[in-house]
Length: 325
Image (cartoon, rainbow, N blue to C red; front, top):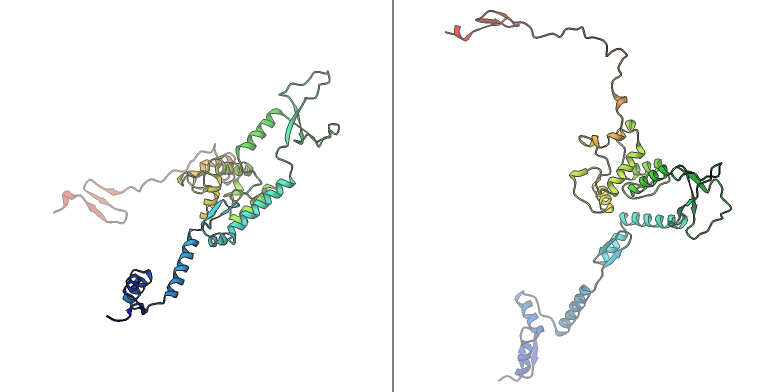
């Protein structure tokens, strides 16, 4: 019996057969056997343990939760690299600018809790109060109760008919998108003209046949209702897929390049209330309707011939089939 025992695969020596048998059961020996089958040289015990530690660290890193959430875009990212790429994207920067502009407007503009308080109707010359449906005065009062009641100037008080006030209130609540708001990204502008300019430059949006559009304000409000209330793409109309939020519709139109109106086919009837094409009709002269048409309509040329043959205009004579021999 030899004095020492060895492992040819791992190239180590053992003093007893028990140590040799224990070595054959170790992961290090199995790993070197697989390398030997693949014709790869074996590694030492120190290298094997270093690889085991590296593999364990990688497994722990994979199990660690690296998810990140973007509040501006309402998106969740599973890895840090994906989140960093999103932060550098143009879409995220635009959303961040919109969020910051909205916050600035909220701080600079009056509070949303400001409300119109009904002021008692002015008394008539005889001392009797006017009926409520005739004329009502409204005054803008701060929600905290601030405001000098003695300083009731003309700029602080606005007189409106009750019917006009109800109509304005209803129109304002129909659509979440106002005339100054962009239809596709929600960017707020100072007026409707600047809003149209923004949509043209940023989204290539234009109003078809604008020279025949007689109600641009009503058309923009209707388009805003389709997006904010009906969740409908302006280009796909009812033939497109169904959306469940205004943000989803806007994202679809921007991503697919559908920032345009479908103004052809059956869609023309949908916008008929906002267009008037009578100016494009040919001008009619006065008295044209009373004039009678004296010109005779030329009928087909009469062909010469008898019962058994026919002379065509080209001079060719065609005979009846009974004359065929």
